[in-house]
Length: 216
Image (tube, rainbow, N blue to C red; front, side, top):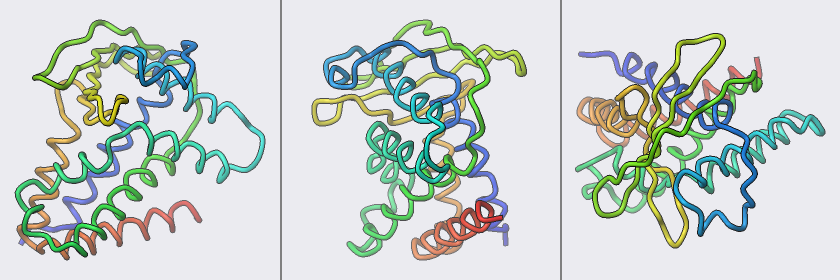
């Protein structure tokens, strides 16, 4: 039997790469938060960066305080329910109401905690917004190039969709690799071997490990 732990060990790396780009490697342009709903997709991405960097740059209070504020930013701007539902694919319809509730709760907490526990510091990385690309009837890719003194440049596409009259991020594509598609493949592997309850238990276990790592 393929090790379930081996599958799950990939998740924090993939998510930390994708989500770290949101905060540390986006430009600091002045976009008023109240205007985000009427902004263009590229302005939305830049506005998200402003909010996140503002939180990280504010050294008042404790790290836990900053983490809570940052989690609120991510919770608002990522379409967590849509991402979570896509990640379990065809298995969603067969899940009970209670399984869906537990899964959504754990999935959102897992993404946010995976990200926040890996916070470091903004070190001058910059991004160039290259262009926006229409993706189907509802979505837009915001294509960016991330430049860093410490790493090679990377191409990042942010898939953005208007949800309930405001933009939300539904996927992050790093050098052609989709976070959403990768998650779906890996979650599917877990479900095939352990079922939906097995996935829920593994997510819960991962959250416990992340909490222990943070405490250590």
